[in-house]
Length: 315
Image 1 (cartoon, rainbow, N blue to C red):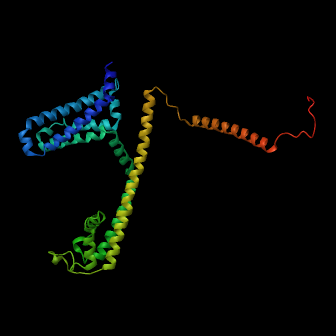
Image 2 (image 1 turned 30 degrees about the vertical axis):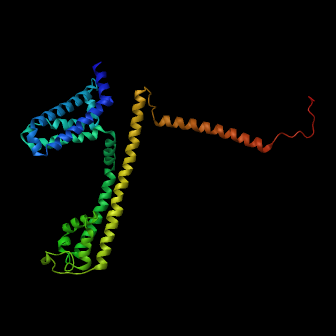
Image 3 (image 1 turned 60 degrees about the horizontal axis):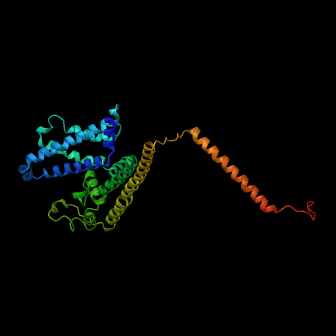
């Protein structure tokens, strides 16, 4: 009886909405603690609120574990439940209360519970996780592009623009600035017009070997922006969108299975033998339809049988 009541509470819409509200409230409280004047004026009230929020989250864990009945460890089969449990457990780590900054950072983790409270956010996170393997290959491709262009930039622009391309690591950082389109034209103009003409005001002592390269610099930076920003970074978007579609399909299948489970509909076993049997049944039905259509076509083609002028004896 108790287990059924806990299951009813855990699956209730009002319970989910209440937990979502508490998570948002926890985020607001943490935000208020960033203002020293507010903390000084309402320190006791904020402390009480934090304690109430913490014990509400503990009650949520207890309700969900109790809803599993005699197998409370099933609670940890859901990664989101593990995530929630970790956030709550961290708040009880010994010694966290003696450091105000650590305690506030721990409280800040409660805001992340919003990820597990909203199914759509779970879907987005799932899509990102599914995209990680493919994103890894895109990252390797982007890394190769950065490395090739960074080495070339040191050789070509290192003497003229030591502030951005004197060393390989500095060139890589400068190209990261370029690929994010943060004032990338300034970097290009320095190498188009020479460091003695553009960009080195106040640091003229660094400009020891000015060399204007208008054609080379414009071709170099425009091609890098096109490849790095317009092409490769768009691959990340494509990979994430593909992961989003897969995650959406899996979520729809999961929701359908849950619906069938609640309605008491048993899910058919999709074994190889079962699929072969269904295929054989479909082929048999197809053969029957083909035979019927063939007889109909022959009948229409041959027309009514000829009588050769014979009279029906019944007449």
